[in-house]
Image 1 (cartoon, rainbow, N blue to C red):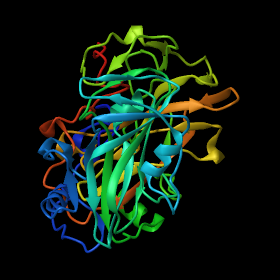
Image 2: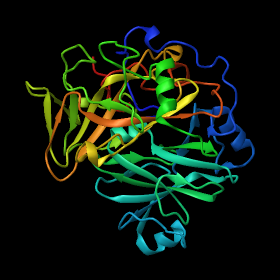
Image 3: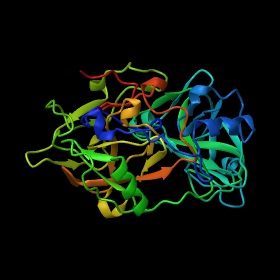
Length: 398
């Protein structure tokens, strides 16, 4: 999700997600950092770019990260661990270098490490999390952030000073990337902002965060370490009688990430329909694009993240790209509720997914302040007010 990975104008009237969360919102000591604070980190050299960091990289509550010039094909995914740098591990696992200056192919089934054009010198109370951008997740390109001396992916420890690297593993399509391509985004936070189900219930009561496609805004929500999101296999959020999802074809041409509204969907995807019982059997190894039954909204003073995998809900992974930026689906930024696009891959056994089944939970976090720009058309966001939608590289389907 570029900063919100998702979709449609199917959430009912604007009043469903109305209100103005900006009113009376004061800056907080802790919280996810908004756009204006990210700019301050850049000015203060806590975030450094090999080339100038552009305003278009700064999202409402995240920063797009750019690939550097060289990619390293490696034998296996790895983490450096507490006593090594990524460069140390590249000496052990690196196979060959690829120059990205003029564009290069990253082949599906292979693993690559790319030094990013951004590095950080964070202060002791500032940390960060990373996620793939929405279009990258929708292409089934598995992308994770690595830092030196780290034992986990996608986390930048408070006070970390050093380079950032992307691990990239295309799973379904081979892709063309370039120096400067943006596959990851970084969400920074100051301190450890508190999060609780009680606070989430209050927020949902004040500004409905999810609403069923039938428009029952404010209805009781399933809240348990996040707010429940379910899958739409009946077309309830679409109403046009089209497919309920898309399954990636196995043998296709390359996809150049720099091309927008370019590729014919039918060359890469086949439509998916549920059976008469609104059930879809997921094939092991196949990659699916589905949509949530609920329309989702993120108020201006919060950010959200979809938890990607929970073994309690089934043997599948959902939502590679989990960040939802402030303003996603929010009426005040032209959202009026937008469905979440679900990127789903099952594991070793076929799995029967039924309409309305729980597939994930949205966790909401407070911002340190309301950002000076919100997700939406005004800043060129790709997925506001759109339904079941493929990555932006594909032509829009009528």
